Amino acid sequence: MKALLRGCDALAEGLGWVARIVTIVLIASMLYEVVARYVFNAPTLWAFDISYMLNGSLFLLGAAYALKHDAHVRIDFLSQKFPLRVQQLINAGIYLVVLTPLVGAFSWIATGKATRAYLTGAVEEVSPWAPLMWPFYGALALGLWAMTLQLVAEGVKFAVGQTRPGAQPESVGLGGEA
Image (cartoon, rainbow, N blue to C red; front, side, top):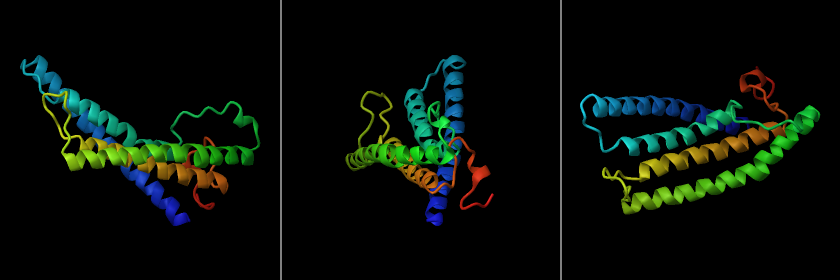
């Protein structure tokens, strides 16, 4: 079980690094577009497509990383009044019973959409650049699957009392180690 949890955590960390790289590419591409447009009066065909594709990919590729590091918004004004063990069980229930099936369903749908786009060679039809859509859809599906796995991992950690709501993962550790 610990190996599976560590695997999910490692995937989230890896995709966190990918999201960082995507951020740098997004910034560079937007800087290029601004210079091309306003300095050389030569706007690119691809700027809008690149910006929404990289931004969407960045958002979902970083979602599991954010969950692992408890960086998502937490509305806990009621649950914080309960004892720690009750808080852990509430979080485990929400993660495992509500969020995992929901995000898992989105993951399944996104995977189907990415597969169809790959098999048909689908392109962005409203763009003059007409980029292939499967890399974008694939990145979204990957981010959603990673989020699903991280929801399971965090839910299990809450269920067995290995983590606390609002605690940084490094301060709690797996199985008692720091």
